[in-house]
Length: 96
Figure 1 (cartoon, rainbow, N blue to C red):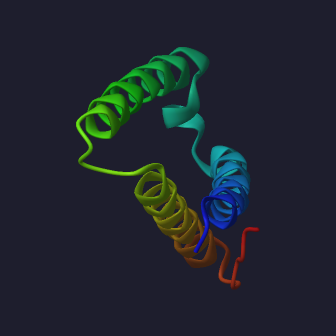
Figure 2 (cartoon, rainbow, N blue to C red; figure 1 turned 60 degrees about the vertical axis):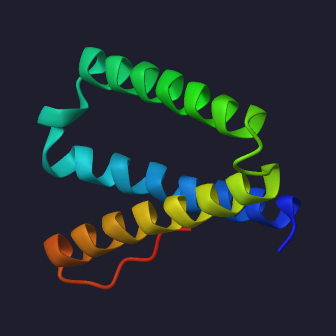
């Protein structure tokens, strides 16, 4: 699979994750307060960026490896929201 295809997979999966988070907020907003979310997002972005840069510079991974793994992880996260929403609504939910 090409980097472009993996990026498209990642974007589709993250759109599904976004929809899942929005739906979950309607059921239980406690973990989605602004401050809670912003600190978590900033921390995750910084950690991910630092690790990826180190691995790329060291030649441990390639850009192709990175995007394939990122798309896989996003699809798994989307699937978690689909299962959670399906369990809570009683209907099969497919996000993105």
